Length: 169
Length: 73
Image 1 (tube, rainbow over the protein chains, first blue to last red):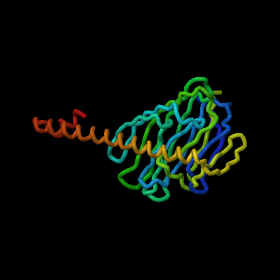
Image 2 (image 1 turned 90 degrees about the vertical axis):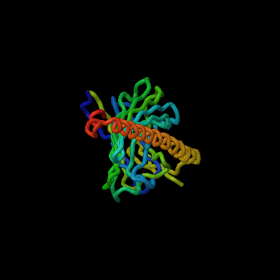
Image 3 (image 1 turned 45 degrees about the vertical axis):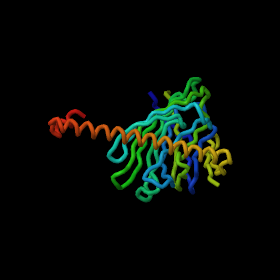
Image 4 (image 1 turned 30 degrees about the horizontal axis):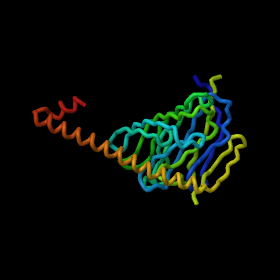
């Protein structure tokens, strides 16, 4: 049971950027937790985003359940790991989505798993929330993480992400 | 040119760099992939909704009340 959280680094967009990235992640923790607050320039109420591990473009497998407005559904994909969502540009101004992504045993010599929960904000009938789980088959320790809008949108100014390291001792 | 904001966890320093041509191409390809995947997801969700509505209409035609149909969900 994790009982210590250490903020490793925070990255905040000072202007719109395509991606937010963490590099040289230390291998001194047990698990990683990524807390994300994002809004996208993509023209919709929400936009799907992705987490890329160690700059890998293949070897991913994901499952996702989500609620969108009054409907619920599920999806699966091999397009990067752990989908999450940003508030889109047509949602209520100055609102951002909240996301947590947990990556246990990130230095192990086994495939890497991740889970996420994500919710967008919109003062209207359609917002979006999602739970996702994903797998990356690489056995290398995670040393970099990159989050990117999946619709070629940008993360707007004040979008931010903080990476926490977690130890069980 | 789109940019990427990178924080080096060993130093805490952030740098903003332009995406490489390869990264831009990947980003555009990813958007196309996502759009295709979303179309499939949307079609699947719509098919499920249509099937549900059809089933409920048939149950109603058999004489079930709305409360009885809702109890089956």
